[in-house]
Length: 167
Image (tube, rainbow, N blue to C red; front, top):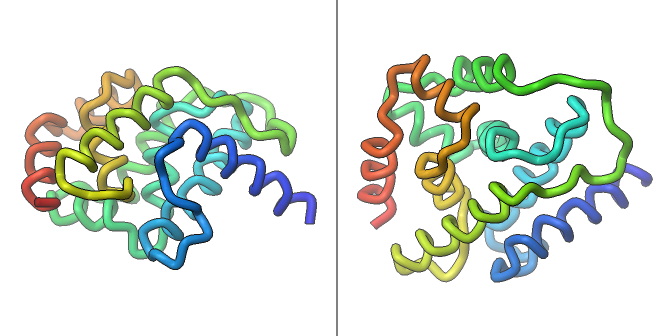
C-alpha cells in the first residue's frame, strides 16, 4: 500500500512536469506504457539516491514490456540489454533513497518540453514513449553522450531515423 501511494505521488509529479499529457489512467496503451516507464524510472533513481535525470528516464523506457523505444533501438542495431548495462555503469551511485519521489531536474523538465514539441511536430496529440526517446537522443545529457560514444552511435542520425519512422 505504501509503495502504491509513493507511485501515485511520483506519477503526479511527472504529470505536473509533463503538464499537457492526458490522464495516466487512460485506456490508451501508450499512456499505460508511459505510466509504467515513470514508475520504473523513479525506482531506478531512488535505488541510487539520485535526482531524476535523463539517463534514468531512458533506463525506465527500456524496461517497459514490448517497449517501442527498445524495439526501435534493436532494429537500429543497438542491444537494449547492453545499453542498459552501460547506462547503469555511468550513472552515479549512492545510498538507497526513501519512498519520497526523487526531485525532477531542470534537464528532465526541458526534455518534457522537447518531447511535447516533437510529438506536436509529428501531428500527435499525446506524448508517447517514442517521443521521449527522440527527446533523449536530442538532449545533451552527459551520461547519454558517454554511452552513445562508447556504442559509436550518432544520436542525431538515430533521431532523424526515429522521426521518419514516426511520420
